[in-house]
Image (cartoon, rainbow, N blue to C red; front, top):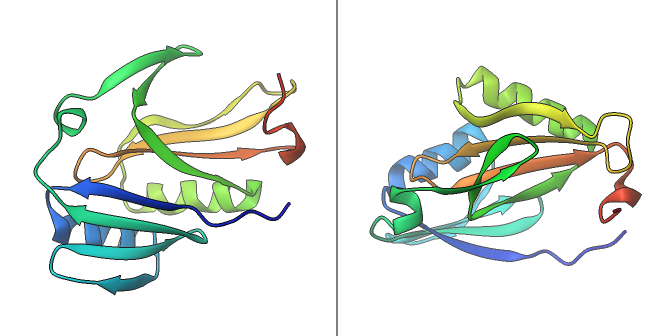
Length: 141
């Protein structure tokens, strides 16, 4: 499956903390930057963090119930290969990241079996990372 890279720009109210988080904790390569924004190679996609006052969703996260968990909305992330997801989960744990929803497996042994985890960046932006046992089931019902 060949995908075009997406571009996502998100607000961060503490640019230095967010820069450290995406650069050091995730180990993302930094691209262009200015005093107000920084580009990152986000698993082959372009993530740009822009300095901006704290937003309402960063101040008070909304959640929706999904499979017994309170999933933060809005959120974004990437679907990774299973081994990449496992390595990322271990890396995040090694940095002492506090998860909103701990890394776990959903739909074990069922259609759409997937690994998932949720966390917040230092500015309150919610991220989800997933992996599928069978990527062909990404949109399975």
